[in-house]
Length: 203
Image (cartoon, rainbow, N blue to C red; front, side):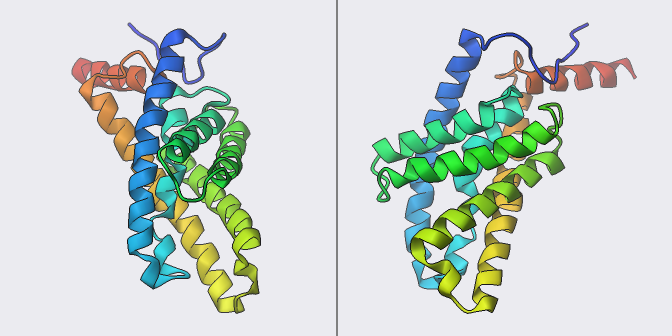
């Protein structure tokens, strides 16, 4: 019987590094698509255009949800942001600063769970934390905190909820979808799926 390890020990394997890179590349493309959607929604500025903001946190949520490694959230978000920047994100190098802050916020939440808690609720909490980081970064850079208090509150709620529900929900759904295909059977998430299936068959 295969016993899934919720937190792999030892150094990163080459397979894990390659999976990190491939997922980051795919999410970087997603970030670019989100950039386009964001521009299309600018008529809803300053609050409504942030509804899908949580998709920009996917690297810091999906990758640790699959790999369950210390540092996976930070590295996943930063690398996804780097790919987005190379693909022409209009914010240039600031994309890396945003990604670093958002990835660090996700990493803090997973660290609080000692990198052993990766339930859907925990992933959504990490997304909410990334939303707070995004609010602080964007608020200082773009002057959001000069808006009227109700607008600032609406912005805060939108970014936090988008991080939790859109970002966290996307990460969990995609992660479970990938696990169901068998493509990530050699990861902690994939091993959990195999164990659950064996248990169900045993019943």
